[in-house]
Image (tube, helix red, strand yellow):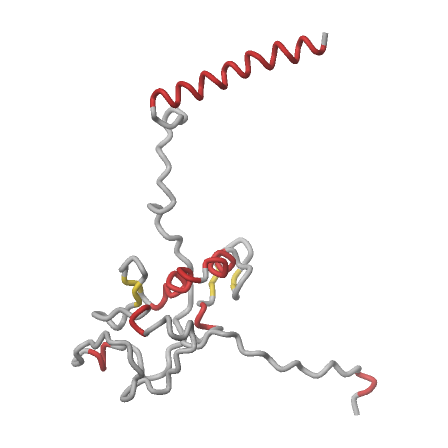
Length: 186
């Protein structure tokens, strides 16, 4: 008896499933609930906004346009000999150049691979193009640092708050001495 119920319940259920699949293929349109709007493709969805503090610019170098407004851009890969000589690009050496990240026409912006210009406050999007796993972890709070209330607004530190974008390897931190028990303090 139980077997008959399973068989009779299973066959009509399968028939309904097959009908839905065939109907969906025949109409070449996705099945949706009535009244619901089509969901945008992930690539079309706007980037979620993250509250971030001001990037830690080196004093006196931002806005970049202050010095670069009079200069003709030179896109040639080269060692800088006049300005920014203190910057050593130790980030994918031989594969990266300043203008891979910095925009050539607006030095106060960064440039994504797509050509989109973004502010330095959105630099996480630039870093995330190559470091997708870290970007994913940063967005959910596993990588980097967030401050704020668990159920309220949060502030995310930018990648550049912990990593030098030109030499991003995280520098080792020397260990602190072990704690001293109060009775051993002299």
